[in-house]
Length: 174
Image (cartoon, rainbow, N blue to C red; front, side, top):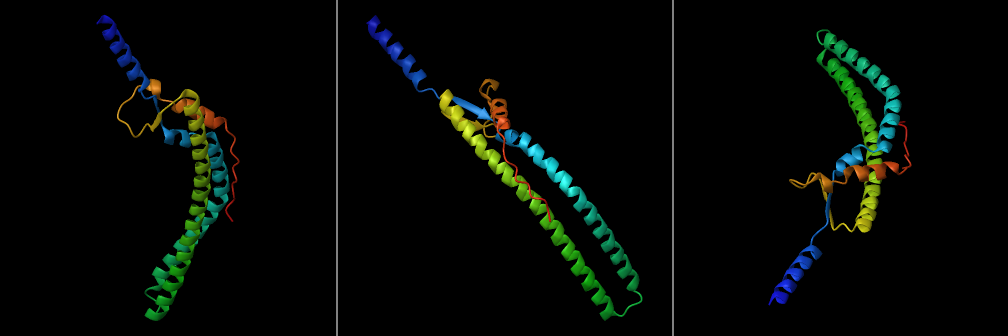
């Protein structure tokens, strides 16, 4: 009888540990946003944008003075001529806004391309980490309620990803 209880106890103990899940958590967004390659790209973008921002500021000042000129002409010009001036101004303003939008989209695309490369590297690193450490499940730290810091692998993965050299194919804005 005692042998039977002993075997039942061993069976329950071994089966519960055999079916336990090895879980880790990762702050995925933190790893992406704190990547050294991303900081390098931000610096390159900042340098490239300086010249263009100055140009945009000058164009904006010209448009502003044009608007003030049209407001003054409101009292002098006939309605049809004023309408032509307003249409001309609106066309210039629309072209300016389109240029600024293309400018912003260009840099957003550059950043998104690099972030996609970083995500792929993170996934590769996580796959290797989970195979080596026999991890069954890795959760994003934003998708669970509570856990112990002992299962948080954010810093470990961030360090491994930051060691990876990513080719930054930065294209200057034309």
